[in-house]
Image (cartoon, rainbow, N blue to C red; front, side):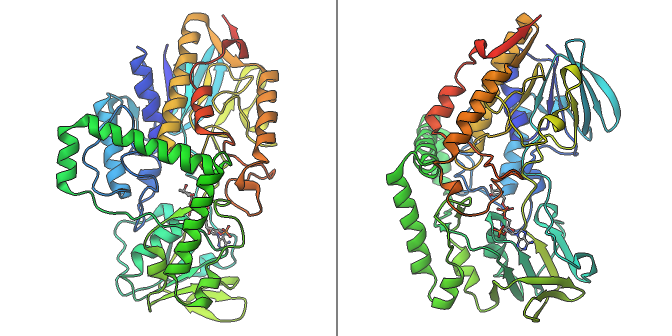
Length: 478
Ligand code: NA7
């Protein structure tokens, strides 16, 4: 089998590892950029870190004793991704600066075309192209008229020095709060433009001492034990709490957020502005032990009024006031539903994936779509994006996809049956009604059709679903 993997972020690396494990060594990872790492390559803004503890946010096949903090900074994770890709022999298989533009089903396989032209024929394709990488700029008048400097958070220029500058941050999601918590200390003034308040779970991000790192180097079994402990806490407590499968854990989580706000923010007026009007966990929970402290600094301002427009000198509010700024950061999120976009993916019988998904992305168990034989996805529609550690998700899906590729290597092509796929999606939509995500807030989990793009069931169900493909759910053709 000759396999094309689209993307060399965490999902692509997981796919490469499990392909190799299964004896499929003939694969190419296509990477649009000149570096791997996906999210961790793109997001280099001040304070970028993962909100999953590092000893869990690592591949099961690549333990790492060297993490320096409970939740390590983005640059450390990016270096880890690079090391792992090298260790597993995936690095040399990356075609850098090859953005896949077109993938066409032909002769029982796929013709792959990149930004550099036709590349070749593959027996199977694994799209590992990510969900959060199309920066979403806000629809605010006058953005181009600003005379200071500005950028989207995912397009940070490493040479930027904000010392002594008046900085504005639009957006108070995970990104905006990390930037605020990190920058407030270093700039002349920081104004956070918050449209909707966020619940914030206090997660102390302590450094991991050298002695502890040595302990893990000396005793990998201990480090493994810690991984499994964290996995249990994160997936079965946190993950199941937000998807409604662990009410007791949910109560604890909600209380922790409420208490964090009550005890950390002293000014009642500021506290009121920071108090969300929706249930804890409805929007993706922000984890931080330093945001409330930062926003209470004398040089920090929380602006909750409506923005009228961006002007030459700053941001004009609807009440007429102007925030004069030197630098404006748009921490306004991503087009999270543009999966596989803008590739032209043409399957069997003239089907085009973008057209199949015109009324919303869907798949069979997130990994395959009827009409697209031997086309697989890691991080596809309704992958667990709001609940479990993404690396675990990617590994589970990669193993499952490789099992299907194994079947294809014996039998020809594999694609899910339409009726089974429809039934799966109907059950999924039904189950979504019981989750916290639909309890009355807006978030990036919702697609244009108002459907939530995450996974509504427990981690144990997800792990069970990904255990072994039920081949009766697939058309298998020579
Ligand atoms: P998010 O979580 O999508 O947050 C985007 C933020 O930007 C959010 O606070 C939005 O307010 C705000 N926003 C978006 N458009 C506007 C306009 N027009 N005016 C004012 N404010 C606006 O993105 P992040 O980058 O923080 O995090 C994305 C994920 O990456 C995160 O969940 C982690 O999984 C990693 P809103 O809440 O919509 O009112």
